[in-house]
Amino acid sequence: QVQLVESGGGLVQAGGSLRLSCAASGRTISTYVMGWFRQAPGKEREFVSAIGWSASNTLYADSVKGRFTISRDNAKNTVYLQMNNLKPEDTAVYYCAVRSRSGLPAQNAPLYDYWGQGTQVTVSS
Image (cartoon, rainbow, N blue to C red):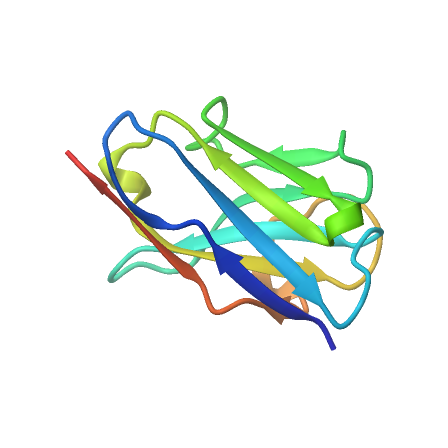
């Protein structure tokens, strides 16, 4: 079992920045694929970004490419999502997820085994 706790969400104006954190417990995640997803009101959950066991293996949705950066600190069992130049359409609940196997980053939600409870990000115009 892996427990994931997201933090760092909040209210920010368009153009601002936030850094989300996802702290894992119960198992070392250093070799696992980690992902961030989001769900806006009335919409389906969508992929945002993922990172493989190697920090150089990253994947981004086109909508956030160039604005968001995913990273991991294996010593802290934590994954981060740095979000810059935020837009109102980034407003959503952001979820962290872990795929309990090593490999390349994946954008398909069913491939992930454990999920956090989510953290709200609201971007005002």
